[in-house]
Length: 368
Image 1 (cartoon, one colour):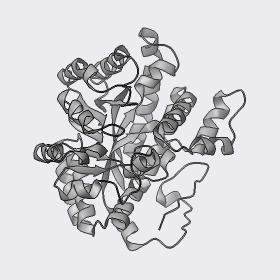
Image 2 (spheres, rainbow, N blue to C red):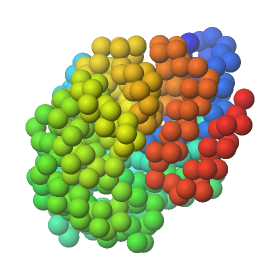
Image 3 (cartoon, rainbow, N blue to C red):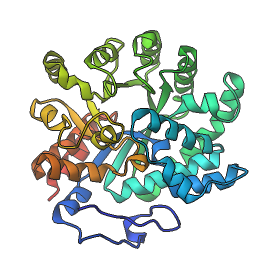
Image 4 (tube, helix red, strand yellow):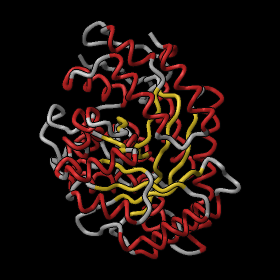
């Protein structure tokens, strides 16, 4: 059964503040999932912007504001290319620091309502530099830093008011120019000393157009600067893309759907315990996977891979992290203990300190 959380003033609030309506009464397993401490490791800030919020942003910036019906139509697509176009449209309405602060705060409220206590969130810095306010180079830096201050205000508020910790991953777009990615990663390296919440870098975008190999030197430089290395790999491409991502030093892989096609690769991922950020509902909506039941989540889990569940772009795909856990239970027969293992994996695969990982693992173990 799907939990429907109705928006108040067009955004999600804490459970204690919400008027909540359900299609049916909340099942015991849904309640258990929400009690279970969880970390979300593959979540794009821009992908959390709901149609109602997009309308609000459009009213701020468009000469002819978007209607709710137009916004909702934008979120209906049938393939990965359609998703990228919708994502670009949302990014184009995030302009000011206040816009980003609003998006980040509403994201945080929704995460906390699901029992998420930690999130490592992708920021599409490459998109901001190309299409956002300002331009690339020094002018782009001057425009970006106020935006990041807005994001930090939301992060600090989430920590103090919601008990939710957030770390930022600066994401470059692989099918833009390599020099654009260089600017993204160098910005992360430059700012991380002032903002320890900047934890890593990543590569998103269209794998079909550009792989990981051109970014080898940039990943080496980011690692030397103390940044953690994530990478989208094997989402719309074959297992060779996963091997390529690993070859440039990627520590954690997003999607990795195609690894199932290569038994040797699956064994290598298991032996090295490479964390995988799986996003089943996302993969269904972008046409990568036919159904949740057909997703390799269960096969990877049973094979001993270090898998985590994530929602990717929940506003676009209609499922949040709690929903992914519920679908794992209803569609792939994950038991309570196995759901606890998935939750534990999310902290084990995170970039938190070891003492923080141990704390949350103990909380998960005691969850009834």
